[in-house]
Length: 150
Image (cartoon, rainbow, N blue to C red; front, side, top):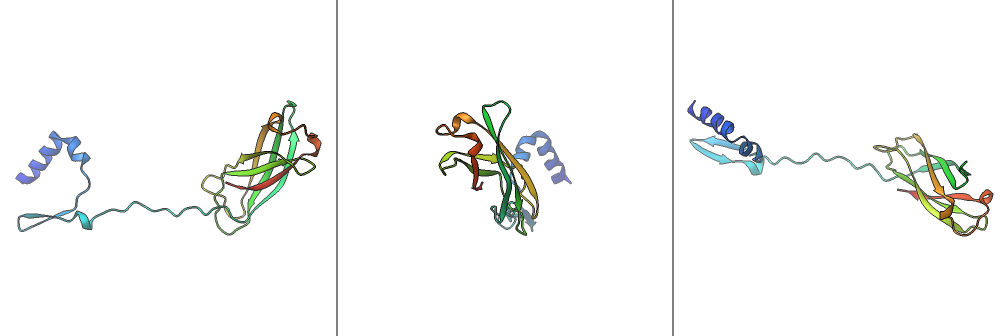
């Protein structure tokens, strides 16, 4: 009983020290305390990583001028065609002129949270300023080329 009150008094007098200690496993055997902490190690919870994006299909990809006259909007949809969750945070694309020249490269964010579920579709959009385009292109002839995902 005396040991119990001693422990309670120590915790009450030194709460920071008692709380700051690492978890220790021990056992009392015939009046001796045996340290068992090497046998009581707790491992952090391991979570399976979400696989990198595979079997993604991009469709309805369009580029169109915005009403402000100074920017273009790239829109489209990405669909997970695999049977597992795929990780994706952005779509990488090039803006291409009619002669095949790359005028700009950028990424459009995808709000996939913990990943894109099998069969799930998500829209993506990105507004870019016309000033970032190389040269003086005819805006009606521009195309978008999807080059990957992040």
